[in-house]
Image 1 (cartoon, rainbow, N blue to C red):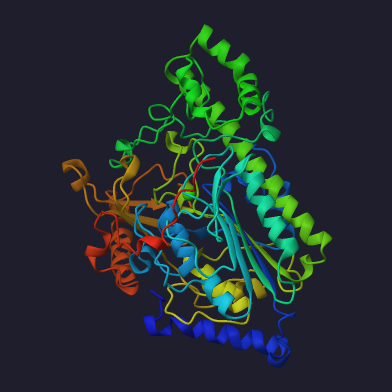
Image 2: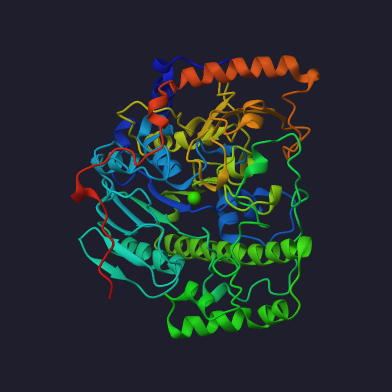
Length: 540
Ligand code: CA
């Protein structure tokens, strides 16, 4: 296996900086030359929903996110290391996998003292700000200004917590309001410095509630069903015990806006009377038809799938429209040329594949993270990169692009060589990525995985019953079985492959020094001083 020793982590980074400095002329790297950074981050916005990823599905276009791909580089094999909100966000900030960054599950909080890439940018002369979903519990540090949702928060009229100590409910749809706050800061920022602006949307996280602007989209469209919508999980014992099925686990009122009683209306109680009226009107006719003749069995699953897809993709359309608003502002202000724009999301999501919504699994749909980077004059427009990259790489990449470096040990590698060389995979690039999920929610078994370019190996760390104990490994041939329906771990033809990948799994776990099982114990994680936590703001 071609992986460098831990001490060699920094070698490609240092070489990359040297390359950058040579390219610019080190003396010329003044404040005005350093690129600005706009970092778009959505919650649960999966690659299948982005038309630039071209999966061949007949899903609606995302023209503004696609614009970034057309003018920059799209990473086709971009992955998370732990497919769930809080852990993935902490990895993005720190460049470290969960077991070394202090957040292993949803209960974790970001250590305010921990080095992060925005903090390093701020210390390096950048003006920094973040608006929107944060989800790491402690107050953001390393930002000149911030306004974040006080947790998961509501799609409509969300409560924000501000860096000046203020707490305030803002009327409107979360995706629009987050963009309003970001644009306001962009216009009044300190223009003597380069800036880094993080625009982080709650959408399209469950429970999918599109803005009124997008509510009528796709009303007459029937979306194609994924071939594994009615997966029987044959050969995948742990997958069968999930609690994230469209069939059994999607809630008719809160997830799908099926309002059959007055009590059901409670799911839109944060709405203003006008918003409520528009919502009821939007679903009224379809709901009445459903209640008159309720579908059952597979027809009910199909009905739920269609409504889920419509609302999820309406939320995606709202994100895309708001990405467009920020790009238009960059154009108008003459900032596009010297601004790196990153589009990403904290993990992928199931759009009915395996019968699921949600994430968590190391299977492709939730393992993948969208990643698109536009950098005019540096990244060739319309390029696609096939090299395997991971959320551990964001911190070293963005700091190197700013002429800075991670002054702490990171697991990630700067993507600058990929960005500068038209997406070609540099010699010696990683041939394996590492994954570990231990949150345990939605009935998803705690598991680890490695993925190579062609194969994936899953290991169920803590089997919950005898059947899982007897089936702790899953092996998938990604070229011949891209849907990962056929576990080859018991297939004699693949015995040698299984053995070599088990060895690689062990060496990868050792390489990332994930050998202390105590850090993965379930629980609230480390607590920090009480004043460092975001407190929900006072209600109006
Ligand atoms: Ca998420």
